Length: 355
Image 1 (cartoon, rainbow, N blue to C red):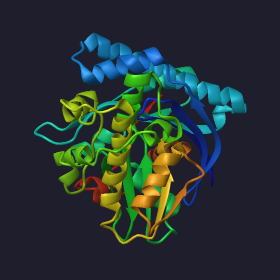
Image 2 (image 1 turned 180 degrees about the vertical axis):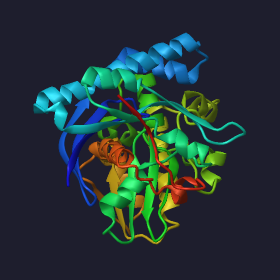
Image 3 (image 1 turned 120 degrees about the horizontal axis):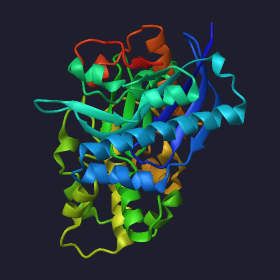
């Protein structure tokens, strides 16, 4: 029997809030409606400041509160647009906004903000949130979670990998044992650089990067970052690949801004390609915002000439759908099979229910 869920995802790119209404049963997850809700520039600046600087607990609490209202407004916008009867919705799957992800070390933790209590009260729908910490408590990385959903959606696609290019890039290898991990930066460094240099939120279709010349020596230097040499399972985020990291890489160099943009795109492409080349795959399905960057896609095709590469029609909606599906799993008290992806000791229930 099918049920209806809403999934919401706000990724590391902070370029918008993706909201998807899904019809879900044991075998399928279908997108019924989708909305991309704008991310306020002032709130984006506050979040980036919280990641790059020391802030007070009060400031952190305010961001958590503001995000709760933003997420509720995004969901209500979809409900209004599609004339959805809220009584028909079983639950909302709310990922929250990641501001820090540190799965290594003596005290591993991950932090996603956006108060689910506010979302539940403002929408009138129960919310499933806080998905990642149970996996961390079980000794896992707490990320990525999309591979379990990719396996559900693309199980009948042999020798296939799924590449999600958001702020970070992560891959799913659909093999006998499910494999998935973050390869490194996707759009995050390119978005930062064009914002810093041209006050634009992103490089549309990679046009600015295409106008520049790749500094191959700088790409090689960047690829010496220890994260790239780590074995999976592994995950990362803005706590590593950020403005400070980039500034250290380009310090003392006299490069044109567009050449740095071209080099950052090459870094994303090469760090993705060198991982995919180590697996026996024939097809690559691309989703996420990077799928809109035609120059990035052309560069990936040149780097991976033996693969059949296609952009999934669900695009940015796919991750929002993943959290609708994860809410479905939690409501039905079903553990999510992620231990081979994250390194957790056992598969567990994920998420808490609010409202």
